[in-house]
Image 1 (tube, each protein chain N blue to C red):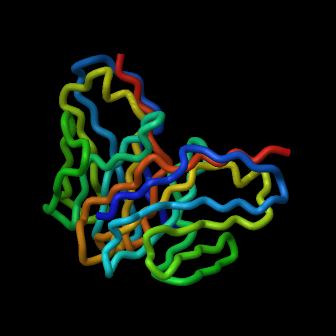
Image 2 (cartoon, chains in turn green, cyan; image 1 turned 180 degrees about the vertical axis):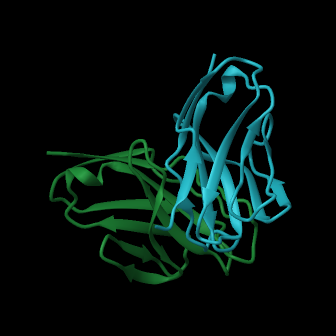
Amino acid sequence: LAKTTQPISMDSYEGQEVNITCSHNNIATNDYITWYQQFPSQGPRFIIQGYKTKVTNEVASLFIPADRKSSTLSLPRVSLSDTAVYYCLVGDMAGFQKLVFGTGTRLLVSP
Amino acid sequence: EAQVTQNPRYLITVTGKKLTVTCSQNMNHEYMSWYRQDPGLGLRQIYYSMNVEVTDKGDVPEGYKVSRKEKRNFPLILESPSPNQTSLYFCASSPLAGARETQYFGPGTRLLVL
């Protein structure tokens, strides 16, 4: 499973766009990139997944450059309720069954 | 409602007193796993199970046991808890194994070992 590196924490204000980058230099050809969001005292929940280029859903966008060695989760116009920890997970279905979530990025959104 | 449930949600115990945290999912998922979450260390996988009677160690299995006798249940057993097992525990499940599968997490169990 590819090792990931994320910033430990980020601060933002309401209404701003937030971009959280995850580095995964040893990503394998079949690996997908998945982001999870965890609110305080809750279990993580799936946000978005992608393989290459750009993926967008109602919550976020995921940008993946051509070399796929990093990915950026973009949260448009954040609100206070976006304060959470965001985890980047890299791997595939046919690979290792063990999952490594890492330490995540703690995002604090202020008024 | 599709969900992963854990019990108990909060538990205070003493060193050496065996305890079990239950986990159950109603989505017919094959893959289930347990994590512990500690400040500054993120989510670390304890054990996982590919299917009934198939379990394997994650990154931090020491001091824990699991069993998978039924597809829906995956209990976490602490035979002799110690204070360093004080943590927040999450159970998760997914349709199949692998990082590409969406993981569905339970609400968590906060454990304090005195």
